[in-house]
Amino acid sequence: MNTHFFTEKEVPKKWYIIDAKDQSLGRVAQKAAEIIMGKNKPEFTPNADVGDFVIVTNAAKVKLTGSKELKKIYYHHSGYISGLSKTPAFRQRKKDASRMIHRAVWGMIRSGPLGRKQLKKLRVFNQEDHKHAAQNPIQISI
Image 1 (cartoon, rainbow, N blue to C red):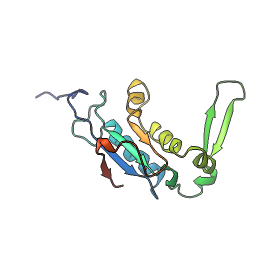
Image 2: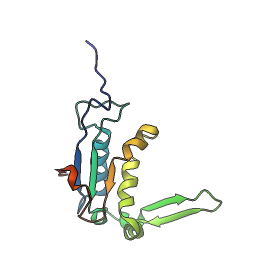
Image 3: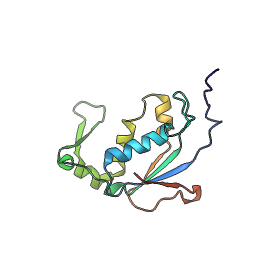
Image 4: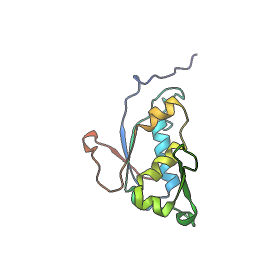
C-alpha cells in the first residue's frame, strides 16, 4: 500500500474567518498558521500548498498577556548601518496592529518559498469589517 501525496490542484480551497477580539495573540496566530499550512485537513502534505485562506478581524483588539504590552519589542532593520528600529507592542498596536498578527503567523510557518506562498493566504484587518464577504468565509471559534 502506497501513501498518496496530494497536490495543490487536488485539494479545494476554503475561506475561514477568525475574530481576534479579546483573544490571545499566540492562540490566534497558531490557529491561523495551522489552517494556512493545511494541518487541519486529512490531505495535509508538507511539501505542497494545500492550506486554506484565513481572514483575521479585530486585530487591534487582540490581547497580550502579562506585561507583554510594555515589554514586547518588535525589531526592524533597514539594512543600513545603525538602521535598527525598536517598536514596543503598545506603539505597534497604535501604528499598525495587523502587523502584530502577521509577524506572529510568519514565525510559525516554514521559511522558504513555500512559506512565503502560504503567508499570502493570510488577510488581517484591524476592524470588524473586511472585503472578502463574497468568498463566504466560515467562522472559526478559538
